[in-house]
Image (cartoon, rainbow, N blue to C red; front, side):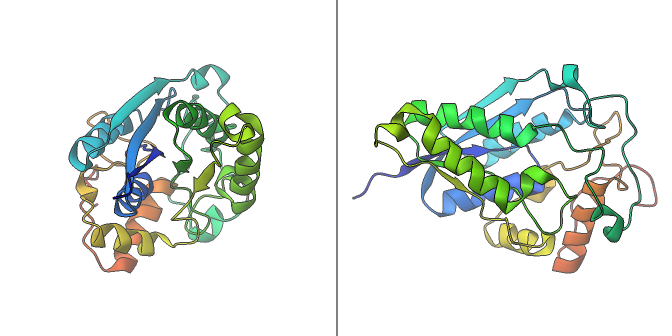
Length: 234
């Protein structure tokens, strides 16, 4: 019997990363979950990540602190308003202020380091190049370039013991397709969190890009949205 392979899975506690974790498990990987407390205003997502890994099971879960708030430059890490109630067309125009400078590059680099220590050739990240907010570090060209770099950067790859693969099973799926996939895999989306600007109680605002894309995904999938939103109208 072939031993299960290890994989590092980036888990934010959101819809996409949770689905990505479910895919990794379905594909037979032993997941090692990695989350980041990077000074994000929606730090409640770390609690969601802990709920997700507790419910779905992982070999280990690291939550690493990163001082990205000291760099700023994003509505998620600095005192910059989070855009609300934008149309899908508007979301597709340019890179929004919720982009965090170099975030996925940094996340994947730390995942790469842990993967090398674990002897894991595979890193899963739930990036998506369709129903998304235009982030450059969610695009296929970025993922391919990082994978090439990874295999030039680490000892285990250079010496031929690992070939690093950055796996992006959601890359070409719409949000509705992601919701359907996760539902088939038994994901409980009620324990996840996607909102960029939650209430003090941790309720989703329902109006930021992430909330709107999440709501759109559930509506188009024809699956009830279990998200708890702030405000009586949501």
